[in-house]
Image (cartoon, rainbow, N blue to C red; front, side):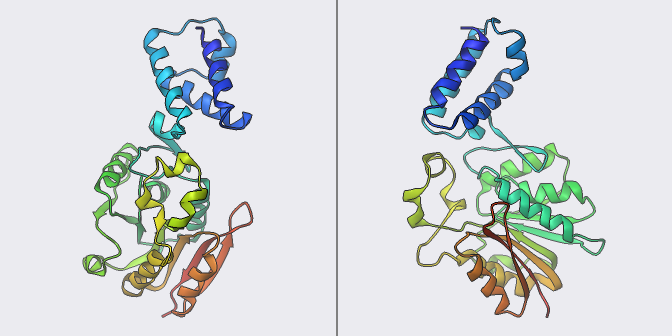
Length: 283
């Protein structure tokens, strides 16, 4: 098959699972990553043959895509805040909403911001994006998964960002003792109740790590409560906490921090949904 025939075959089969726009985007990502072929290259040379080794790569990728495996895991990378990061099934695929959170964090960083911690870092996307733009800041990142931290370390090395890495169970307050004081605490923690699995897409529930997504139905705010307790010990006066939340629980997260006499703002994402909670410690 020629590269044009392969491209059309991809589009045709993926259109059974995705919109035409999404199918086109996924196809372009596969061809660019696995074969170093841009869409323009295929248009210029539609009858160019594809080598057997590359055909095998395409066949394997298409088979996995038809099983709902996310394209980012197949090609092993994802873009986040202008940075190309390695991803695998030990970490969440970075979302556009989290880019919005990082943008908000950037606007509040000043010359007085010395130390930031990212809780539940996964691929390291938040911490690396902050450190890359503000290299003078000390950034620590935390995750329960050593496999996730291994990937975050690799991403930090690729982007030449010196970051502190800590593997621990953040829900255990005993693990907080060696941390210092921070000007900012940031987190996109697990926040989806287990019951919502039934309504979610297979490409999420069957491939992305459940420990980074789901929380008990009976205590969906478990991580936000822990973060608030951590802030009481390790966030400086006038320091800020930045959180991504479930759209149904942004108000409840707001209330956790307002009850501690923090100045709290709930902010909407680009789709108009309550998504981010920002709080300033006043005591």
